[in-house]
Image (spheres, rainbow, N blue to C red):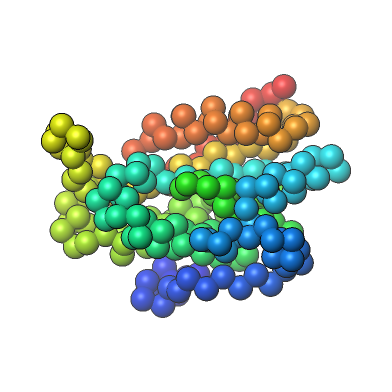
Length: 211
């Protein structure tokens, strides 16, 4: 991954699913065809299983801010390339900084999820943000990189200026509160996402509230 950060030209989109959990997702037909990562249902079942087993987990919800404007500026085909890029980046970061049973998954749109441990989430999120911020510019044209934003227009012709894409990561974990249901995890993540997206740069926020 360090080579990919220092030299983006060596970055590729090949995910090597070389752990038992990914192999199981493949065998059960639970890999998303666009990103190659386990899909939303597979990730949900894994979270539910770990909660039922009383495991200490950290669930990191990852999304790109204002991705709809990127699609509008560059078209959906280019947008799919960015999603594949982010999928591979998340997979690599989790593989290099997480535990062997950690999961990098894709839940639709521009939303990804990482299931890891209390000890690993901070390193994973930090490395993901660092790498994404360094590499995402290669998906923009030179003029947009130099300006630091892209220009789109509303149906009325009004100009919209959107900064280059950043990441918002919401971390839900069961260190101070009991997590008993997948829906509870999602609800907390949605609350955190609203806060995380207020930052002008890539950032991860952690739920530190008690029950």
